[in-house]
Length: 141
Image (cartoon, rainbow, N blue to C red; front, side, top):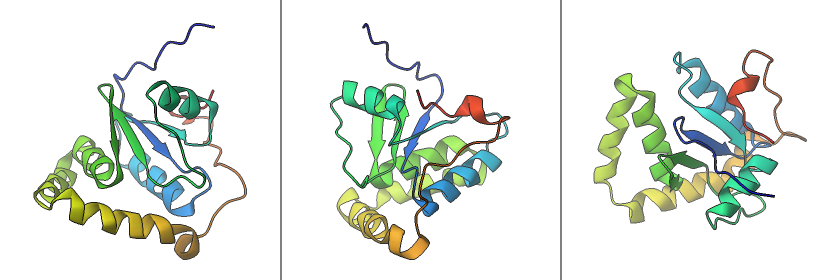
């Protein structure tokens, strides 16, 4: 079967579908993205496995980082969050200033939150199901 990568005209946020913090973050972005720029895919989905696998990315269990695919480039850890906020626009662009903090400082903080997220925010038994009016923004197959 021939594989065609996703058209990256829309940035794709790959998130841990069972993580309550991650799901809340996705909802937060959706509410602040009136132009529906972003698309979303749980890291547990066939779409994520295929798209990320085609780029040589292996997803750990549990996933260690949110990933952002934009213009055929994968951002991870703090760079994914900062880029997502920049793309969200408005005053969120101020997050770009965090890039002055070196990644060797930003990413350990990111990893600490990522390691603790299940304990602090909990998990769901299965990935979230988007409402019918948001279904087109979730890439799962």
